[in-house]
Structures are given as C-alpha cells and as structure tokens.
Length: 265
Image (tube, rainbow, N blue to C red):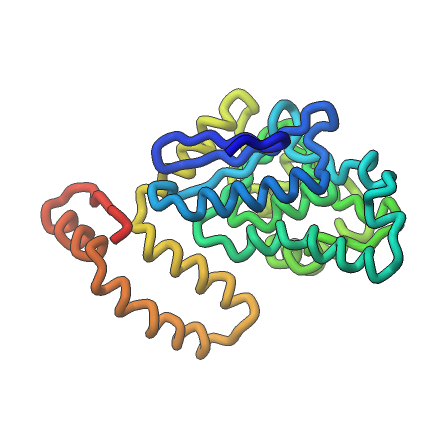
C-alpha cells in the first residue's frame, strides 16, 4: 500500500513506522493520522512482525500539529463546537490505536517531539533518543488543553510531580533530562541511535511473542485495576502460555543450554 506521509521499513521481525512530512518536520495532519492508523493495522496483522519502531524521517520525530491544516477551512478550528469535538475524537483514535496495540512499540525519538509528537512518544511502550532529542508538551503554550492523552500518559512514566511541572511550565525537556527522569529508556549518540534501537528491538523480538503480548496487556491493565484483578487475568493467561510451543521450546533450550528459538505458537 502506498502512503503520502508514511514510510514502512522491515528488517526481519522488526518494522519501522516512519512519519514522513519533511517540509514541516513531520508535522501531523489528518491524512498522516489516518495513514499511521492504517500502517499500524497492517503491521499488526503480519505474524512475522514482532516489534514496531515508531520514528520520524529526517531531523525531527514529529514537530506537532500541522498549523497550516489547523488554520484551513477543513480543520476543526473553523467548525461548530459539536463538530470540533467529533474531529478531536477522530484524531484521538491514533493514540488509542497505539495504546491498545497488540505488539511491543518503541518510539525512536530522533529529534523534537512536540504536542501530538510528545503524545505519540509517550504512548509507546519504550523510548530511545540521542542528543538531538527534545520533548515539548506545547498545547498549553497555544492556549489549549492537551488533546492527545499527556495528562494520563506522562505521570505514569515520570511521576505526578514532575509531570505537573512539565505540563504546567511548558518547558522543553532536553535529552539528558529526559533520560534521567525515565522518559527515555536509552540515550545514545545520534550516529548510534538506529543501530541501538534495532538492537533493543531485536532483544524483545527474540522473546516469546504470545507471552510478551499478554504481558503487555497485563501491564497496561494494571494501571487502572487492582492486584486481585491482575492475578485473575494471570490465571487466565497462564494456561494459554503453559500449553504453547514456545514454553516447551524454552524448557528444551534450558535443558540443552542454548538460546531458545521462539515461533509465537
């Protein structure tokens, strides 16, 4: 499938979903949002893809909303309040698609991640970055409330106090600070970023896919549930993984003192 604002690259069991609107530093417009949702669904249906890396082309991750589009007559800024709300709900579908995704997601933040770019980075499971990485939750700078889930996502990564500081002061978060606060899982030089991210992704992809997907589901369910509910979920998931070929392969590999070769079955 051909896309205008999206590129997809595959390397073995790892796929890169690349936002590509270089003239605007990958600013998000409605078509890019729809293409990203389509690309995610496409990769989600491919059993051989085990990990998806979300990144931007060129020197930016995502510079935020495309203000040319926001100022156009087609945007919600020129609509009635009910139309604005419906348009925003549609835009939030991308964040929800990422949040409910079936496979591990890594945001390779190769440059600025602003407003919706900030939200996309935060909704991914893990983030890698370099010295060019910087984050800005800039909605409030424009007199707007955060529209892509940052007030829910960000405190769960860095804690309530730090999230409140960043969301209310509207300061940029530079790469080193992002790493120190736990927003970035890995921080490397820009010339090492892609290789380091692929190595990180490969380590996850080498694991048992079924067990990892169920673990991801339990991880996020735990953010809005109690321990007893998660234990009940574990009791449901465990028989599935116990009966899997991957579990038997793990036992055999342990006995034979070798690395397991998981097939996702």
